[in-house]
Image 1 (cartoon, rainbow, N blue to C red):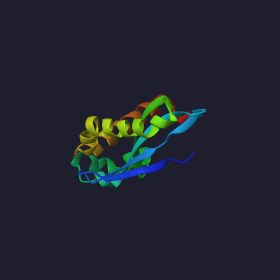
Image 2 (image 1 turned 90 degrees about the vertical axis):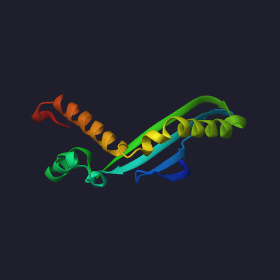
Image 3 (image 1 turned 135 degrees about the horizontal axis):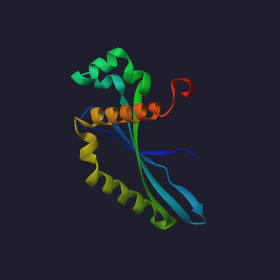
Image 4 (image 1 turned 30 degrees about the horizontal axis):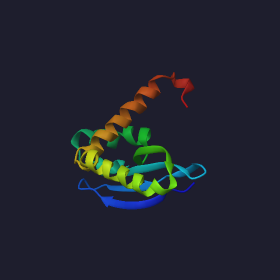
Length: 134
């Protein structure tokens, strides 16, 4: 199933946010309405942060995260009447902009998200002995 791009928004922190309609029919005229919010964060974008420069140079973050990290959030409403689908989708968009837009637009968001993802990777990595890494 293909997601339909609704809108692309340039954020004040230099990143680009995509709003996608990932909705699908579930039964007859009923829908699962899904708004997907996606931001691609290139790891090298963060080289301006002093505390990350050393990790970037050593390759630690790149080896754990790759060239970029994808932030993704989904907002879902189930069993929506077909006639209400667009209204519900618009409500989800408005809800995102009123509650989370300032957070993902903040200058510290890319750094915080990257560091959190790196911590999660290192934690998962510690679960397995060196000879059993997947």
